[in-house]
Length: 429
Ligand code: EPU
Image: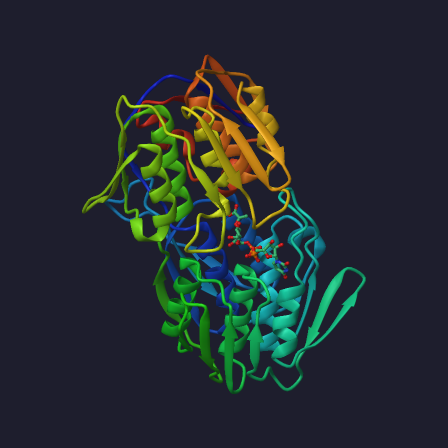
């Protein structure tokens, strides 16, 4: 298993290219199941989760061709996928695959809508909490699906197709909204989704579906209206930049000090996080190339933050912000309201010398003068990267174990940071 070695204390200067968003790419790839024509996706990041979803879709009979590198492209340019679900050979998604990546459960919506049936394993728990799928099932039920749970599988049927309906989510859910939008796109009649997730990735997927011939309006707001069409066609779509990768590198620069341009970043996708960094004393400046992040000399001020659905502060940046606040001058509070157990990074940050106490969903972080390098490991993607951020400012050497978590969601993280002057390298094996 690969590990990452970081020697703290180096400032970051230069530029970092931001890749296409993982959390848009995954539902976009899944949306390819809605049509027998080819969906072309540009700016797809090179991530382990993308590779795994390729395998999962392959199991359903989907053909995926990856375009070769074109002249003039760098290693950081995203890939282009040509995805064809002309022939769906299997409507079952087995436990062995779904349990490795929760988002793959979402295949249930396009399989059911197009094929009239789907049998998808319940994903089970994961390192950040229980993460049930009851609201995704509720959404499909409201569109007329017959649903039963059979030996760990959700079996959904709609012999005569899905019918538009009203879906009112009692809680904001990204996956619930994605599945409802996909299923309703080729249901008969109109669907109205209330209390929809407003994450930018919902809007990106809806844009792509509209290019494929869907009639979706209001995506990005909390009320989405979908007029079902009988069939969707092919399209070409460029994945929007990853706002979580953007925020993560912004916090890395804030931690290490220096000045870095995050190329292709779109500041409006993470205003809440940039506002918090501003309060902490970090300079954020939108530029033509992306966003410039700088912290020169001055220390970090503590912040009070509560995670919430978009446009609030994202849970996917909570661990990274906590790492940053371990060095603030004063006491910060971070409250996690989306996932009940997303604090697995706390004990690892404490190993580096952080002072953090937990009380239910609220963490109190007392900033310290110095962190000290140590071997650490993490159990999920965002927790792992928070350890990298802490290590950038820790005295001496930190080894981050279980790097496969990082590879699920960050493309060439060590190259991007090393390119800006960090002392970071991957140790293979
Ligand atoms: N929930 C339910 N029932 C459901 C679905 C969700 O109670 O049927 C609850 C969840 O347990 C959670 C809350 O609703 O408490 C929100 O969950 P949501 O459905 O929004 O999360 P998700 O769709 O499973 C996506 C991202 C996550 C991100 C969350 C929240 C993808 C592939 N995943 O997950 O990303 O944290 O939205 O923004 O888009 C990550 O990238 O590291 C990651 C975990």
